[in-house]
Length: 342
Image (cartoon, rainbow, N blue to C red; front, side, top):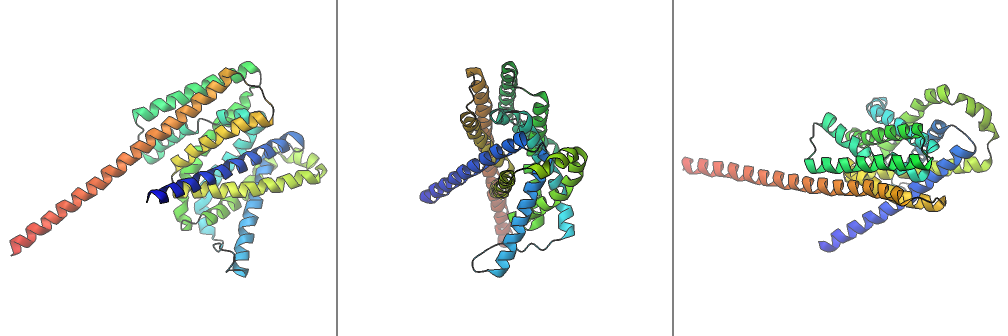
């Protein structure tokens, strides 16, 4: 049993390591595109959704042609299911757009701190949407995260590299990220628990939701620059779309097999690695106070995760004990009834 647990944990962290590498590569690619050739982050999001939806459909078709080699669920489109997934798709489009807009105005290294309020909003939405209260210990951890966040903003401002509009997009990204994990868990039963079906419907909906936003906000830059971009630009766009496909699947799978909370916690661990690698890749020099603010946020998030994990285990044990007592009470009634009959 112990060997099995060790094996599962090892595979999980190997899986998470791949996830981190894919995410950082996608992030750096997006930053490169936004800065160099096309100032249209929502169009980039739309293209990534198109690649993901196409890859889902292509793999489903290959599964029909080669059933012994390719295992993939059939993607028979249902308008009813598409409407049921629509709330998640609206949140998803908002989240990815805010992510790209935040990335446009802020450095990759500050991107983690700018979006570190996800845990705070997760607590807020858990209370208002799921009527679940948070313990005092967990709220103290949230206060630590907020202190680290404020300190990081002040330090970044003193360095002269802070964009307030980028910070606003970071907060909006945190809000939609917290909502996305909650609604992903809610929508999975609507597609029979299939991660691939949810990925397909979510990205297909997102394609149509993004079009009016692109027409309203990005028509001019697309008209001026789209047909003057290089072949390398489109190559990076396709690669980024493939990474988006892989990341979307892994994120949804993680929420399915664990929980929205676990997904957000692993996101914090991913973001810590992302911050360090971004500083190395872009050859940035950061002050001790800058690193300390990041450590405070990461530490607060880690302790919060530990507190919630202990609380969830205690709830599980409590419910198991309650069921045992309930069964014992029912057995006692049955025994009393049988004795009376005799």
